[in-house]
Length: 201
Image (cartoon, rainbow, N blue to C red; front, side, top):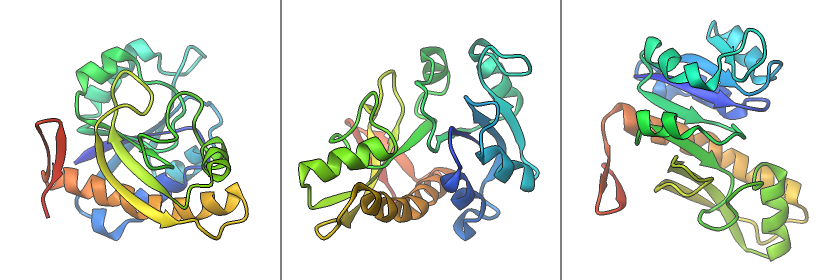
């Protein structure tokens, strides 16, 4: 299965995908896209001989109006948002319906929505005195963090002393959850029935 990974930061989840043993011979990362010209994650892609593309109106970037054609030319079957901070345009969501997934560093539907990314999420979780947090992989729709939930994993945060500690524990879960979900897509074991996402064993 050909996938494209969209990133905005250092790309730790991208690295987890590339190095996942369970995705070997199942998935090929055909391209890495970012809203930042100098995205740190591009270095990971280049070290692995993966094409990189910046998105936007700057010179040498792919405009969002050309994005669908670019993805089709690469024969992309699944789009994976791994720390991508921009809202995906409606036309792309429609064109790739139920083929765009995102990983969120909290247990949706709590602690999601516009502005809830990175350490901002973990600060909110910490201030709430929640005893558990975790990661969520969900489908993308036209709103931030509102698409159907595909899979979640929890972590105990009852004894943490800072948002940074929560971030560290959640990131470890992200690095196993996202490859797991991608593998299930590649195996054709994810379906939607009566507004519920089903994953076959």
